[in-house]
Image (cartoon, rainbow, N blue to C red; front, side):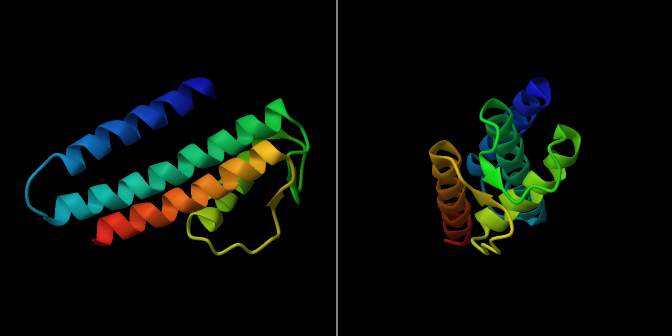
Amino acid sequence: MGIIFVFCLASTWIASKGLLLSGSIDVNKIIGAICIYLLLGLNWSMFYLFINMAIPGSFHGLTSPDVGTQLPEFLYYSFVTMTTLGYGDLTPVRPLARTFAYLAAILGQFYVAVLVA
């Protein structure tokens, strides 16, 4: 899981550099911006999984204690948080999980705002 997380972070970094340091806007840059947003959601979901593995019970509302079934749930939670929908079916309980949840919400909104600007 750690190797996949590092790969996703590196992919996000490389794609961000390619998007931000180039010239005019075209279709490839728009697709790249969408890919970066999706990678950010994947990175946050894996980060939430690591938090829940390190501090069990960090999130309330998980359907299973099995790590294999938690990743899709955290993927759902990361996009709900990044878009600030906040359904409330999966909630952070521990302070570390809450901190990273609001950081994800801020980052998600800033990404969209800066991209549109």
